[in-house]
Image (tube, rainbow, N blue to C red; front, side, top):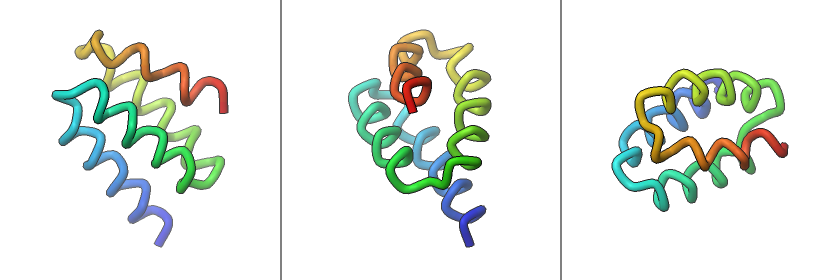
Length: 66
């Protein structure tokens, strides 16, 4: 079941990526809800995903701290 939550989180982040403020809010929620190893996977995915969206790069600080 936790894999489903991780996949859902990625889907939500992709859908709100048009708005950096909303993306940041959803990323904070994801960090609270995911397991540590899922956060690591999310971190790797975010590094790839934000390469094409520089306006979202600033949100990476939330996942690097945790």
